[in-house]
View 1 (tube, rainbow, N blue to C red):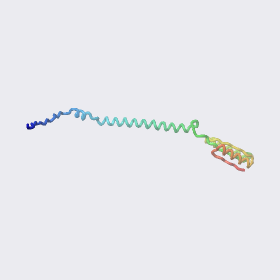
View 2: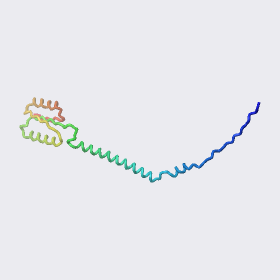
View 3: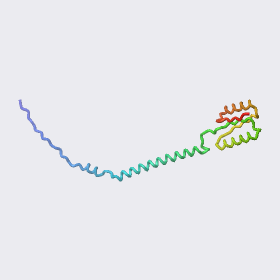
View 4: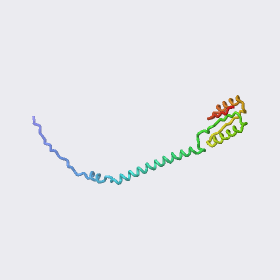
Length: 139
């Protein structure tokens, strides 16, 4: 048999070339002034968005305060009076109506001419109508 032959291998070191790309990247780092400009632009955009948000919030609040744009139903006061023959009760009725109108409310007035049964019936009717407040001036 023949003896195996040995071949010798020589290790070849790869040539390390200087890499100019890394050097170019290191020299192209953004300067600190560019970072400040980006920060200022970001703050400016956030400020504009915040201003727009508060502008629309303010306008929505003002729209709700205007009487024509109100979505709330008008409140109704039921006023059941025993009699309007006495001047004092007419004066009280007029004051209640004036104050209610000043506050944007409606007043539904009933006069029973001193009839207790009629006053009970009219008070029940006002409740069935769904008045928000019922004022009873009994006999």
